Image (cartoon, rainbow, N blue to C red; front, side, top):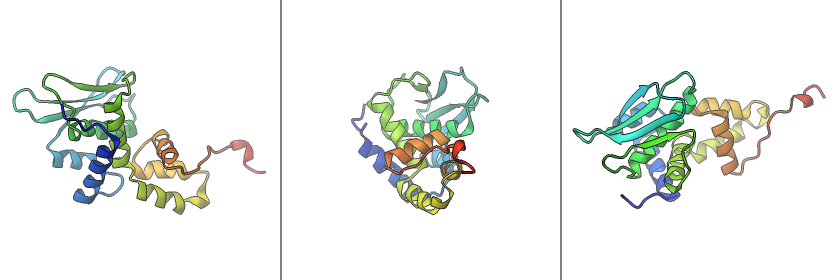
Length: 178
């Protein structure tokens, strides 16, 4: 197994994807997958499974399956797809092994690197900072607007803002009208 499970590798690969593929938000993940030679299948699984990465046993082509259940919001499916692409790019495949991700997946170094790749692919720092500043006059809706622009969940957007040290607050309805 390749020894590149570190955040710096995830950062480098996400940056290269933006530069090479000339990406725009929200990132067209099907286009990225196609450029990487990854087949993407959307299938309903058990609720506990978000998706998995493997290679086809006959021709070794990379395969990502995403849980398309109505229980998995589109933003969650997008993050999962980007995460599974991280498994592919970071060299996490071993023959006969599936990288299955879901609700109870342990966040070891490998999984954290894939989460990091997904966050950076979907929400690059420069654009997050730019849009955060652009929306400073709309503090009430800023996080939701940014989440929609990047095609991610509000929770994922909040995590990214925290990582970047950008202050936001949950809107307090009690303050309205004061």
